[in-house]
Length: 101
Image (cartoon, rainbow, N blue to C red; front, side, top):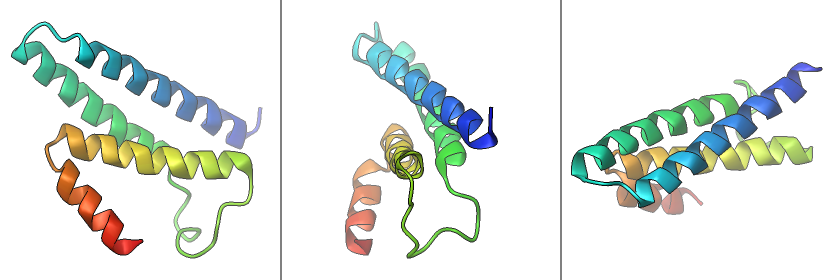
């Protein structure tokens, strides 16, 4: 399997982990359990962001060409936003990203 295929599998696994943590968060038993899940969710979001970001030098105005490159870019953006909300910086992060667009 190519390194791109391997990266796609890792990105898919990270997204599935985030989905599972989000589901667990919705049914959290108490505040302590919720805080632990939020910490895990933030860490999973950072991990997904690291996996999904294109290598240095390709960022900027160059648009992703393949479907998988676009998916990785969108996954990185989503993971960054999930991590921001999990750490309490979500609304400010969202306002900053709208200002850039």
